[in-house]
Length: 356
Image (tube, rainbow, N blue to C red; front, side, top):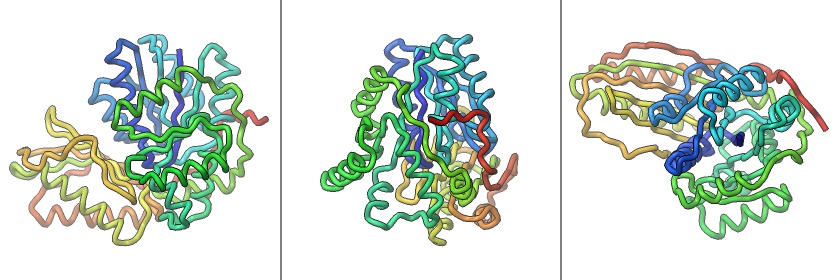
């Protein structure tokens, strides 16, 4: 059984890659499953995997490393219940130090599992960092980002279709110089031909030789705490226009955050009305949809799950969210709050940490 651990910063396209890869291997008769992870308790990604009938488990309210026993139990439950050939485990986007806290403990405790570590990076964000115009203000956030790249076994520069060849060449030169020895891929995770190269690489390498990071946990904690988390589940009611009102709410929230020049790690929504569903994602640099928007669909009710990760404080993000809701209320849309949380991640305290 292969465990494909997938890391990388918020909004780097990890989920899209896992969905594409899972569909590909399942179509070929290979048994696959997913473990999703987040600091919050309401996961858009879990809703997406379930809607696509991809077998999955979730570790919520904390990262894999701080809930190692839950993570290990999820792996074992999937193995015993469905005997997968491959499990994709997507770590929360603010998490680093996976070699020391997940891979080495698991190889020590359960040596029969083959593990790879793929770290994803948004190509446009990476290029903006090289040019000194990254949207993220905090040096501590950048510290976490760079540590993620440093520990990769496979380093995937995702959304590379948004880069020119000159930009790709510059990113490649930087990564090969700064992080030598990495397996480097440039990928569009929506494209199966592109993702096949990643799957082929996963199948031929292992990560037993990866080194634990030299990690300053105080800086790491400050980097995570620089990001506000907001999770919400709401019901929208509006005669025949619940879907279009939901789109308006999503766009209004994105524009409200952007207008205050706040860096978006990711802003994810999962919209459902009856059997119809859709995931919509935004980052600071772009808006990408899992599917084409269907603005003409008529529905009286819709449920919207919100995951926002923004470089600001939780109170400011909460204010933006409720001001956005009020705009919809003014248009005659009835909104029922089903669940809500806004917070900063706590200090990372891994269950195990095996250094060099």
